[in-house]
Length: 75
Length: 267
Image (tube, rainbow over all chains, first blue to last red; front, side, top):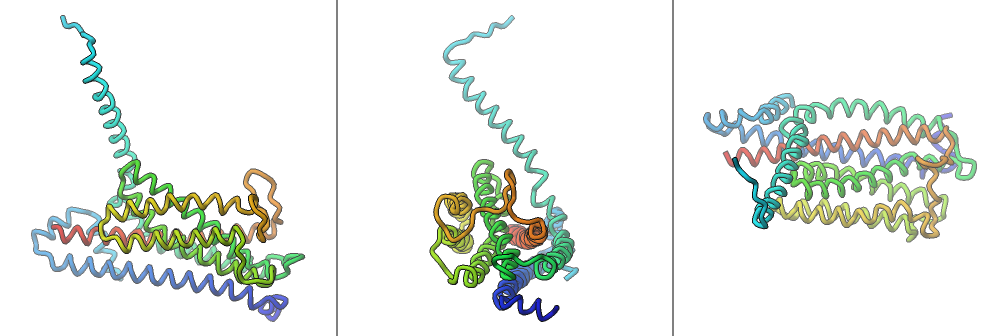
């Protein structure tokens, strides 16, 4: 049974390479996108941390900024 | 008692006012319609959704791969190599669907002057590009045992290659142009121009003699593919759609945070 699945009647190299290419592409795109997101979140957190009190108060008025910070703290 | 005196000047003043009123009504309608989807409001959802989408994608992909590689029958002509269809066809469908969405969103950003449209389009492009490459590569792998060649300048393959070039130009344009307005205009033009290629890809098998067979799945007419192959194909398409949704959400969040980063600089 396992040999049959691997050999695929002699077409195993074609079938498995097509599926492998697809899954490797998925994994690469996922990790690249995830890294970009983490990098941007960290940049936001460090910028926010360097603001003075008045600017922090102004930035905190926007819910989205607080939401980004809460997501960053979960990393 | 006041009389309404209708003179040519009434028309001259009145008509632009009517147009103005209609336009302002249109703008108010616009604002109300799009306020629900404002990035600031939907970020709460888009930032939390990826983990659920990722879980669902893994479940659906596992079921799809089991169906595609083990449970589905082999083809009486192509034997086991037909299984490549389960990655090749969904990838091609989704890459076409995403490019059509890019074009519609680009038109939308021109008509409604809504920046969120271009942000959504920009976030959709990477997964569409990868799906297009997957369709070309897996098609090439499928071509060798069935047609005896890795590549042929057949109408469908060539038009898919043109689409990948449009995807590449679209993504590059966002990187090259620093000015956001200029980038939006250029990328919108690329998307709208590239959309002309979408119906060419779809109907290329009907318009020209190609190595590709005509469509086996029709929404409006009879489908010639057997249900035992249609089910795995449907599951794999759902898995691929979930993956593109996952990448879109992550990319959209990244773009929103980039905007907010610039906002902090302006404080």
